[in-house]
Length: 346
Image (cartoon, rainbow, N blue to C red):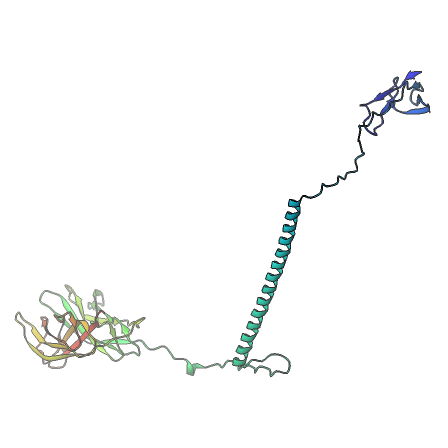
């Protein structure tokens, strides 16, 4: 008969040792009697010399139940718990007060919005709700035809009464009158002149601008075109492409010419002198005088322009002027004076 051995560590608490056969190490045993076992694997009988008893329990040992009673609270802890509970109650009360205030504010805002909407509806005649008069149906938009559409204004100008005035050094001055024959002011009237030979071959091109920056409907102003060292030509054609004013407002100032005199110039030609007066209510600057001379048959025989000697001309003030007209093609029998000025700077 063999001896029975145990496996593992000595037993602790309620843990039982595992028994095994010393011949085949099997743990499949059958208990025959106290201390007697038989191995079901190798059929050996085994004897347990002395039963293995659990170690003695320590004095005062109590099985663990997982619960340990808490020690009683001290007076300081009790005070702290009381304060925390009071603070929690106060915090909950404050949150409720704030929530009630937000609800009251929201209700007040809705009431104000409702009152404002009702006031606007009363002013606009809009009613809502059961039993109210329905709002009137809006009148459909009215369509307007061509009679209500203002057509664009005609932009047109012409250049006429032109004459050729050669000088002594071979230059050619072409002088004429540009007239606004359209319905709107035109901006900086520009005239082009082309010289042609007998075979209609283009020889030279020149251009000139009106001395006045804009031209009102039915208004005219002299234009001088210079062609330097002009070749011999057979014919002259003129072209003007007027442009409407894109911005600004035409300005005209009341300027009068007093005591004008036309006489022979010191070095040939003619000299026009006189006085220009600002009869307007505002001051002007850069007053300009344009002299146009006419011969026996009312054709243009000379033209020249000059500025007044005084740059700024206040309202009611006057300034003498002197215009030297050196290029003249005949004896003048009459003359015409055009004036223009710019608004004074503030």
